Image (cartoon, rainbow, N blue to C red; front, side, top):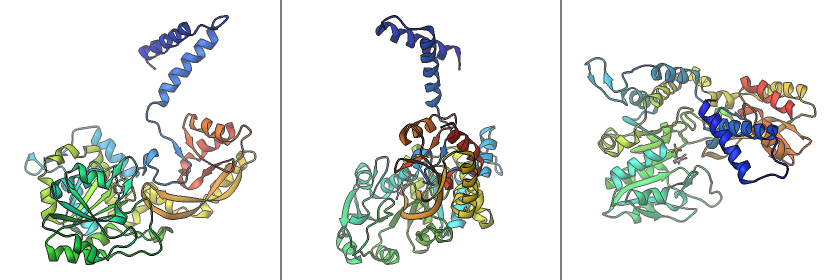
Length: 421
Ligand SMILES: *Cc1c(COP(=O)(O)O)cnc(C)c1O
């Protein structure tokens, strides 16, 4: 663990002991135990892999999408040596950082052009800063979203110096509402995906194509923040149908923004696809330099996009392998848990896409439930302190491990952790 960190742990422990004297003094054993605890706590402060037994597939706190083997291999390959990240091998001079990812994104989504930045929040920021500084952006009241982690559309708008013009009522917006909100100051018409809530019941909104028509008629670009960025019809995985990036592009939306590490199942990135002329203006914004992605992200993203380009390869993406696991497969794996762990039983559970996508879309799943002697809360804490931490769920005093988000290769670790309880 390194001489210096061991010394620091000893010094701190002794200092604490001197500050708070103990009747009869501290024993050598208790002091050593404290020193070792301190050092081990230090280990937990580093970034470690965990077993996600929550059943939430895109858990933002647990790092969203795990990467495909091909993406990981690319990170290793590109990270280990120099690369042509910004170098044109043909001409022997500086080249474009984004070229490879852009052509893949364009052919996948049907868009004219594309751009990649640090995350979707950065993509929205760049779009608003480029087109709407000091001008108006019209957004439906029902779409003034707040995503976790402090991303609030009204605040981002304000930050870029754009003025938010709310249109419609909370539950209903008509094309006329957008039309009435237009003025000489309007820079953009904006749609945003209500990623983590749903308004149901007496609702209405115009078809995106109608909004695009209004935009074309008035010369105002229409942008859409899709967030989760589905690239295929999720109904085939038993989830609710979700508007795809391809559909938004086909509807004629001028710029579409989405995340790389949500339903795309790639690395953290923010992607903008759409009109070549508007993307060119994004590229000319000096802010892009501050939001640019590094070579490792580009390496992983490019490989992820290659997988998307070949439908037969989709299950190489861990997210889609988990989504397509059948209940029979999950039951068989759960069987191994129940056999090894006394008192464990198989229960029906529900997995969720999570990560600010598809709030209402639940996926039937199977879990293993135990009622640990010392109570579920204490047991959950112990699982989190496992060498390979296991993050479980507590329901009705039971500890539940959802099989869908546990990789089959992690079963042994999870079983051992449960047995130790
Ligand atoms: C998740 C989400 C974002 C933020 O994306 P990050 O990649 O986490 O920055 C922005 N908009 C919508 C609609 C989202 O769902």
